[in-house]
Image (tube, rainbow, N blue to C red):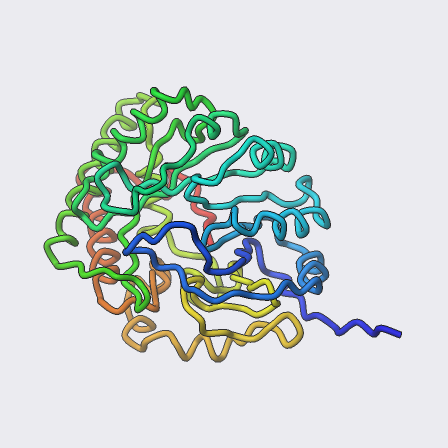
Length: 339
């Protein structure tokens, strides 16, 4: 007789990232994904179903399409009426069967694209001619400052036009992230990169705000809104950091919890629960005593530099100055219920 082990649900969890593994068909030098592989544990399905507030499930690699059979197995036990499914892929392995599966299960498919001149491995290109058939398509973009937000946006706009990508969410607007500088990523960014990134983001944000305040409601304000979520509005989680908190968790296929989706340090499992005490010990004291900690929530607590810390502080001050300069209240302009 098989006796099932008890699982310990996390009732406050709203967003879940399922870490499929680290295998990928590309070798982009700045990639911050970790390498390990995990054996599928079917008990994660019971744990997911017991998390009553869970609504969003993101399948994450490596390259998720290398784990498509596992994604299909998990989705077969869940309902898209209850959960919003999402995956971030390099898009090179798309085929029509995969497109049909994503469409049938109402996936939001996010293709990583850092601009034509990003320096990433261009041996393969995303299959944009098939991406046009997806029900929902978005872009995930990173930059170290060498490419401006506007440069990447122009490249995205060209893709949308050339491949007739009429299925793109937010009209293809992007909010480029600064590349995470963690141990397994081959990056060497400088303060100059930080300054270029800040200049590029701030220029785009202020331009969008100006149009918005002119009652031009058709102008894109995606970068402005997402940036406010990241660097200005307080987070509503009760503990933890940006990527692991009372409302957001990364779960490996074998049923363990990651504090950072891109490293190999574990914080409990589905049978013992998330180890809040261990996670809290990882948060530096300087962060806990920082006046904007509840805003940035230690943006990337596995960073090997303080670049993202600098960016968070400068962006927060930038938004404070914008409120004074334009006599606006961002809390009144945008909803702020973000984790």
